Image 1 (cartoon, one colour):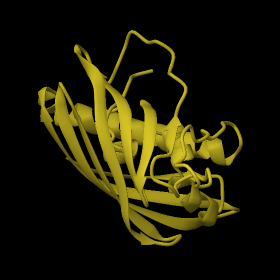
Image 2 (cartoon, helix red, strand yellow):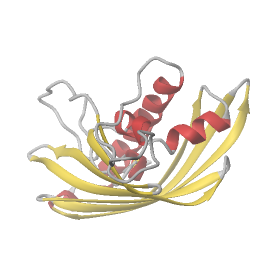
Image 3 (cartoon, one colour):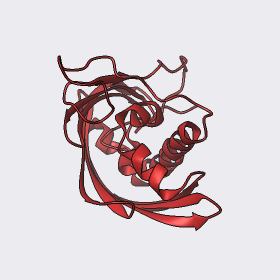
Image 4 (cartoon, helix red, strand yellow):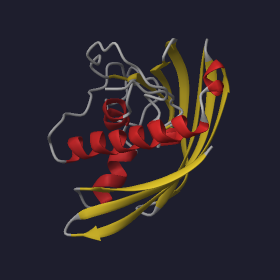
Length: 210
């Protein structure tokens, strides 16, 4: 499944770039992500919720950022697996000055879904993924504008400073979302097929309908 899109964030390119490399921001912005643990430079393990109709559960995922071109572009490799299926996504993200102190972020994602969740129609998955990508970027924007706080590290290796994204072992948790009787697939990854993340993150990767 291929998809693309763009969003304008209300901060300069430098700040947007730093936000997308900061797990303290990612954990509160990725829909459905409850836990993010740094495993190395620009690498994370994540826990996300996933569900569509009766297919629901907790998924374990990984996110790795690579091919970083500072303030210009990066790639995200997202993987997620749970009892109901798997998802993998490769997301190319680009940054550009949109004027007036804002940044245009564009993404192109290629996602592969397997298992029971793979039986969901491509059109529905694409629609949900785009909506979750928009929700992810809105979450990043909320942190950048001060409308929402970033998460604080819960654990840091002994002898190392508590600093987002620098030391393996740091754990970031997000507040639990309010209970809802409805759920959609791909809430959490947004980034990854959504920055999908999207899809992030992406792999995140899963979504709950609001």
